[in-house]
Amino acid sequence: MSDETFTSRAQNAETFVRQLFEPTPCARNDHLSAKFGADIWLKREDLTPVRSYKIRGAWHAMHMAREENPDVSLFVCASAGNHAQGMAYACRELGVRGVVFMPVTTPQQKIDKTRTFGGDMIEIRLVGDYFDDTLASAKEYCAAQGGHFLAPFDDPHVIEGQASVAVEAVRQMPHAPDIVILPVGGGGLSSGVLKYIPEFWPQADVYLVEPKGGASLKAALIAGQPVTLPTVDSFVDGAAVARIGALPFETLRHVVVDHVLAASEDRICTTIVEMLNVEGIVLEPAGALTVDALRDLEDEIKGKRVLCVTSGGNFDFERLPEVRERAQRFLGLKKYFIMRLPQRPGALREFLDMLGPQDDISRFEYLKKSARNFGSVLIGIETKDPKNFKILFSKMEEAGLVHRDITNDEALAEFVL
View 1 (cartoon, helix red, strand yellow):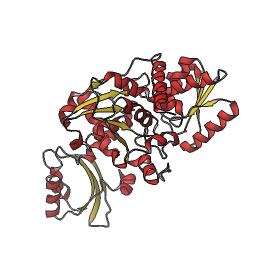
View 2 (cartoon, rainbow, N blue to C red):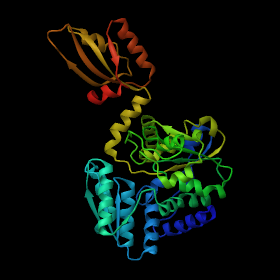
View 3 (cartoon, one colour):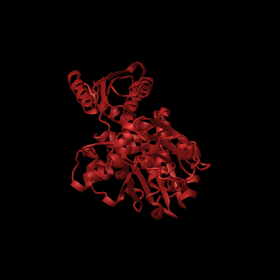
């Protein structure tokens, strides 16, 4: 498929998308621009009707499927997130039946949102503890029913639909950006945008960012072909993909490895909190990827015009305590440690007197064993300045209080925190 043909198809997809909603905003962000000394613009895909770009690919691919085969009356997908919601919304608008397969472990909030978007036109089936089982069941059902399986990213029409993000941005930006930053999960959005913009912004450098715990694109670039990651951290659930899509990789294989960034899950949490507190912008972890990557590119972007695609805002606020916790730990404002406390009167008071005015105990568990002279204490401390921990630990060492920092000990923290 030639670039010219793809350009035309992406523009046609954008025309289809206009039947659903107006172009999402593409505007300069003053806070980020001042912070990084650059001209930062955000393409706000978190503001589509389903709060993610996924509706674009689903809508376009379903249109094309029905054009190619007017008898298609059933669409099937496997998804626990934005793709499911995009297909559900499109099913309702098109008046066609859809069946969404989700893992049994899917949070009720995501199930309810998908059902709200699809209404009476969709059925939700909870199958399997793991997504691979869910996917296999969805494909088996689809084949048996003669439906159309709607892939989340490994589909040419889905990729063309996601490229409508770039069609809008090219029209909206008053001047071509120097740098474009795109999130990567399965690769549908990034490959579509990357394939579209060279004709219009030939001088723009493109950087791609994926979660550190799901860096499937970088692994594929190193191997020269898509590979399956042995493990995936699912925290950035909108982009944590074990294997980059085969079709997207045909475009992404030409990306320079150094232009693929990996954002740590904990640091992404600090970006989510910052954008919420400072800008009032709600981003899901995958939606915050490109904004988070600005920190890695601070020297590169200074004085330049930068476009970031914020891909989604489906954030479950029940996760906010976890996000805040991870952000504090990343910033060094919260630590957990195990301390050996002498079992004698006044020992606890002596420790409490070591705390500074900005230190606050958020967790305290004391396991007293009468046969011992010392007891183990699990303590969580929050503070306003990371330097306060250096002062506290120095006081503890002077007093002979043996302690072990377990804040970043993943194996131990999984059981006790």
